[in-house]
Length: 231
Length: 224
Image 1 (cartoon, helix red, strand yellow):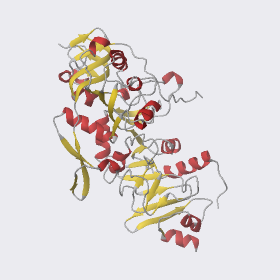
Image 2 (spheres, chains in turn yellow, green):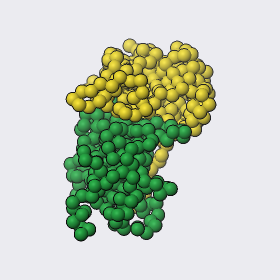
Image 3 (cartoon, chains in turn brown, orange):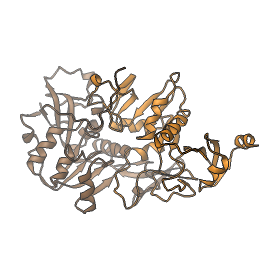
Image 4 (cartoon, rainbow over the protein chains, first blue to last red):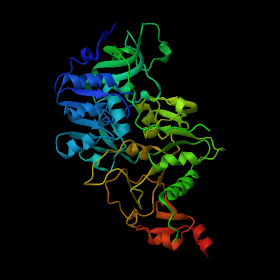
C-alpha cells in the first residue's frame, strides 16, 4: 500500500531546498498543477527542475520561477515564458537545453539504470560542446547521460492504492518516464480508485515506481485554443 | 520577378508545394508554424498518418467547440482531435519512433540551409534562446527531411548559403529545400535545382541563392 496524502501541501513537505525535481507535462498539458501550487506555497528554494517546458508566466512551473525558487532548469523549450528570459539574461537562472527526444531518453535511461547512451541529436551543434562523439556504422553520435531526481512529480487520470497509474491522451507525454526516475515519485491523480478497479492490462505506470498519491481537481488551462467552426 | 504576394499567400504557396512531398501510406511529422499548415492541403485520396512528438500518432482536424479536450494537443500546443486509428504514447516512445527511422518524412521550417545539407533553425546569437524542442532529434530520424522557408530573408538576403552562419540544428541532415521560388535537392555533388515555382525564372533563383546551384537536366531542357 502506498502513502495517500490528504493534501497537496503534505505531499510535497519532504521536498527541501537544493532538491532536484522532475515534473511531468508538455506545455501545460499533463502537469501536476496542484503539486506545483503546493511547492510555491512551501517556499522551498534553490531547486533544480527537470521538465520539458517551464510553464507560462502565471501558471505551472512559471509560478515557481516567478517566486525565484528555481536555480537551474533542464528542458527543451522555454519560449512561452517571459520571466524565464529575464532571469536568464540577469544571470539568476542557469539553463541546460537538451533536445526533446534526448531529454525523454535521458530520463528513461535514468529510471532504467542506464548511466549513459549515444544519440545522434545535436552532433555538430552547440549542444555537442564537451560531449564525447563516437561513430557507429559511419554515423556520429553524442554521449548523453541518464537523469535522475530526488523527487518526481507526475499527473495521471487514474491511480489506485497500489500506485498504478493511467494517463489520458497527450497528458501522458513525459509522465511515465519521469515516474520511473525519481527517488521518490508523487502522483497527482484526478481519480483515486481502489485496488482491483484498474485493468492490469491497461496500466501505463506500474505501481512499483510510485511512492505516494494525492487526489484533486485540475484547472487544465489551454495554451492555444484552436477550434473548427461548426458548418 | 513574381508579383509582390502578401505573406499569407506566400505561405500557402509553399505549404501546397510541400504537400506534394507526401505520399499515400506515409507517416509524417510536421514542424510548428508553416509546416503545420501543410496538413490543410493533404489530398483526400492520400492515406497519411501525422505524428505529433508530444505523444500522438494520428493527428486529426481541429476540434469543434464541443469536442475540445484540454488533454489533447499537438506539439504546437494547439487543441486537436485524434484521427480514426490514432494511438497515444509517451514522449520517450514518440522519439523512439523518430530516432528509429520509422517516420517517412519530416517537414520543418528553416532560418538557413547550406549546400552540404546543414540546417539552422533554432537560435540567433544575442537573442533569447527559446530551445530546440524536438527539431534536433527529428532531423536525424525521418527517412526524408524537407525544409520549407522563404527563399530570402526580410532584407532580401539569401537564406540558402554556402555555409550556415547561425548555430546548427543538424549537420548534413536536409534532403530537400522548398521555398516560394524553388525546389532544391541536397545531393552528394551539391545543391540541385529541380523546380522553379510560378512567377520566377532559373536565373532569378540562381541570383537569389548564395550556394552553388546545379540546374537539373529536366529544367535545362524546359528552358531551351
